[in-house]
Length: 295
Image 1 (cartoon, rainbow, N blue to C red):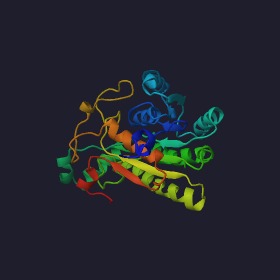
Image 2 (cartoon, rainbow, N blue to C red):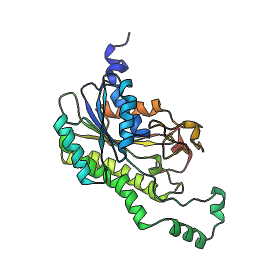
Image 3 (cartoon, helix red, strand yellow):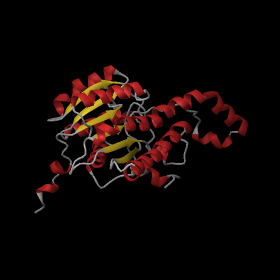
Image 4 (cartoon, rainbow, N blue to C red):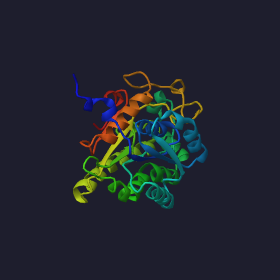
């Protein structure tokens, strides 16, 4: 008979823990927030769209048991807004156990029919990219997808450090993408480059916050493949979620999008497993095994 300490209810118990999920009102951010709250955590969700945050709190608060959702409108690309979140959590709780840096945008794209790219001349390829993309669009994308991960983590360091005790080491989970691992541009060089930078930032933070500063804060990343969200779905978001039926082009060995449950399992693992740090974990239906990738 197995030990009761290995039951899932004990392995993923987050009662008494406090978390923050940026971009937590919709999509994978909402899934992460619900996973943490459903296992006992008080979860602050931030985002720029107040109506989406309020909708999530109203819709799901009755479904998460002992956990709690708290909405804070904020822009993660603003130092002032990040400080506002930190001030609220410090006043309410005084510490932060889990930080999920989830907020992100897709940015500029230059689309072609896949079969036509090889037939384009250098002039045509050059003109198409220069016409549809700009330095400003790249700057904005990196500000949100990469720089905000750094500034968010640094803003919440004191609160993360305050949560340490003999049984818990605080966790930072950066949500990046398999797009930062594969060598394909997927029509958005900027997005893929920003996520590759976020992946490397993850391992740098993991090293610096343990071996250079000796704070002992764990930093890992989830690199999702194809899941249904506002970014990947052609359909409308309803109550923060989109239908997997609206996602096209399942170019992975699994032949489908990932499920909420599969994503939530990884969030809970990285939140609570004190033996993991510096990892970029792909959850992608095997996509990085099937295409050219950096690993």
